[in-house]
Length: 191
Image (cartoon, rainbow, N blue to C red; front, top):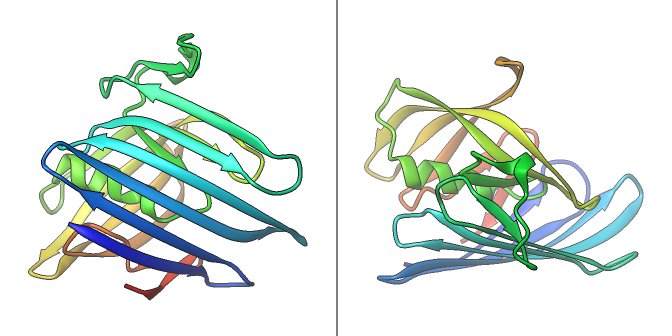
């Protein structure tokens, strides 16, 4: 698989261009996001690498506007995280996937890795990266496969606080597990 996808926010200006390439040994997703934080424009580039089974290996983010910053996280795919210097990040222990706030692409990671059957929910610990603030926290999220169709499917995404759902969205995905529409947040405009 090699794809180019573009999403735009439902409200306000912005655009994301994602290039994703899957080979026999790995998956590399490279995205560039242009957006607004209040009235302040921002640009962020990310690169996410997974193994061939969609297990996360590296997350690199670069804030290209304002005060430029970079964030480099590495994981063994089993819940252990380190920074680029090799120091363990205990607060992220147990997290298997990443959720970058300004892109719908990161929803694809657990969808593809888990291959859920319809009706079966799963609760996950996630590394949540708030963009453009570049703040990293561990959060809980729940994914439920609602249906699988020949062209993709639908998934319920829930953000949890203390095990209680505080935000829910139904996400239609294409045959590659890439979000078509994220109601209220992102819509695909190309690819």
